[in-house]
Amino acid sequence: MACSISILFKSYFCQLSLLSLQSSIDAGNQISMFKVAESTSENIKPMCSAWEPISNFCEINGDIRVQGNSSTISIVSLQMGTPTGQISWVVKPYVQKENAAAMDLVKNWSVTSVSDPSEFLDCDLIHSVPAILFSLGGFSGNHFHDFSDLVIPLYITSKQFDGEVQFLVTDNRLWWITKFKGILRKLSRYDIINLDSDENGHCYPSIMVGLKYHKELGIDQPKSQDQLSMKDFRQFLRSTYSLKRRNAIRIGDDVGKRPRLLIITRRRSRTFTNMGKITRMAASLGYTVVTAEPNISTSLCSVAQIVNSCDVLMGIHGAGLTNMLFLPDNAILIQILPLGSIDGLARGYFGEPAVDMNLRYLEYKIKTKESSLSSKYHLDHVIIKDPLSVHKQGWDAVRSTYLDKQNVKLDVRRFRTKLSKALELLHQLSRYT
Image 1 (cartoon, one colour):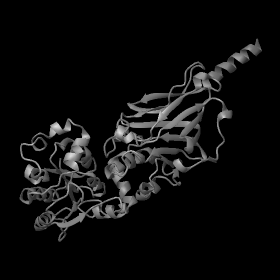
Image 2 (spheres, rainbow, N blue to C red):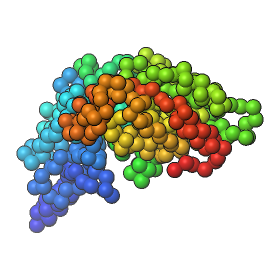
Image 3 (cartoon, one colour):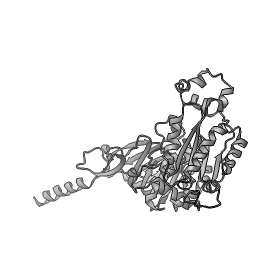
Image 4 (spheres, rainbow, N blue to C red):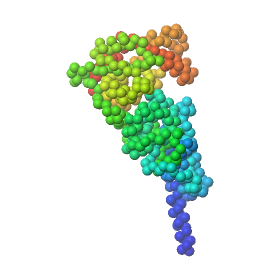
């Protein structure tokens, strides 16, 4: 009897100690976690789930082995030898999960459990810190998506570790690592591992596969585990690039100082064809005018320094406006909207994020005569008269017509009122809404 009771209790406590991986929803945020199983018969459920509809994200703790040359992540299951303990999950560690064009450029990673410890290959390198695995495929190379899809999500995901985390990259692009090396070094004290060319088996106590994502070029503070905000992220950028100016000029207080206007220029499309007139008009209003054309070969540190020295940033809708991230607080963004009925998209990409960044936002919608399309098509042409019909053909048609093949000749008299409004705002402390 004593022996039977002992066996019974031993079995009971063993059942309570078994862990199964379950994907669950916690306070509206889909994350993966470990759960105590009530019995050995409970199936192990996938531990990977979506962080909001747009992001692939897994959070796994335990005995984990990462093998880059086979694109696999193995976990030792405590339900050893049990068929129900087998799990398999395929993850593309990039945030644009619903965008086929982006995901076609992202490698699949297999997350599997190993029920027999003998099948768990030896670790070539054992690490004591957690790891974060993410892809540099997708839309990387576009300045907007570099920050919106990668840098900000990486900040949200890794900030909790205070540097004690190792970054693992797949679909590696060395130029991307070089471009953002200052940011990467501030977020992790460890060397980045390029898994695509690494033959070692790396073992970690925990790993996050993919990045947490909140919204376009922004952070939703209530969703953040550490209550992070865009204010925190912009302060992080100031610290990373040693940016001196925290606040924009307030005209009247800074006697003798002229507000600085930065005009973002472009070469291939959406260019200003009368830059000289724009510059002279702005100078006549009292601005010191600066022009810049940030591109992939431009040092991000130098771009940050230039932008931070200015009080107003203006440009035609495009990735270059992403550099508003480096503006001082209460500075002003002026987004120029080209023809094409992309106003809502443009506001979502830059207008709404600007407000979260403690910037004042203005926009200027060009008239038909200000677009180069007016010289290519007659006024009754569908491209001029009915842009929404072009939208029905899909995004590629919209981009080709209104973004890749359109330049702007600003009506300087009409635009003068917008720059005058910006001067008025620089007299004020309150945020423009």
